[in-house]
Image (cartoon, rainbow, N blue to C red; front, top):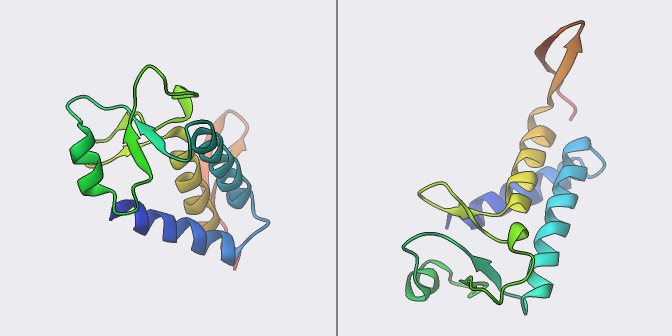
Length: 123
């Protein structure tokens, strides 16, 4: 369920600002995920301790995920970053960060030696 909500947030941010810097990050993240999906038969391998195929199928209504094994390709692009409530891929995090950046307009600005947080509303 959380994946669906996060996916909707990414889609909304790209729809609102398709050429923003955050959208470009989201595009790269989506390309990373697509690479993992295509190379693994259109299923995303998941690597997490204590996870079983049955648990994956219970939580994945679209049956996009599968338990990762030694035959999985591009393991670094697969879901392996375990945050307790969900397992993410590097591409997922890049898409989420890009969506957050795109929606809020937050950016890091370097002032001499210091890095401060500057807010710019872009919509």
